[in-house]
Length: 147
Image (cartoon, rainbow, N blue to C red; front, top):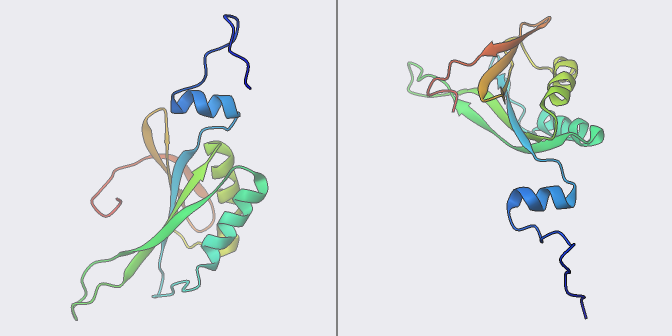
């Protein structure tokens, strides 16, 4: 039999925010990585996504939620090849996840123009890889192709 709460006990959590705090689970934040497909070279086995998931989980700061290809412009033959891969990531710390991705994405074969999309204080920002360094905190200018 459970004891009745007394007047000194805190009320039971009943909102998602209160439940998260009661469980001491940090809230999940969202970012995504946009990797261009260069020379029609697509990672059919999704090893890069699996490696990103692994390194985020090893650090205890997040995991890959999913991924998918986005089609490019229509070619003369009517086909629309995959233009980039989008990797959706849930993280507990945006800054730590960005730093880890900056460090590891080049070694995973991410080409120039790879982007990390994230939000800080309700501002949509992008880090862009030049092929040798990251251009940080760029304002996002969303187009219909980015969603």
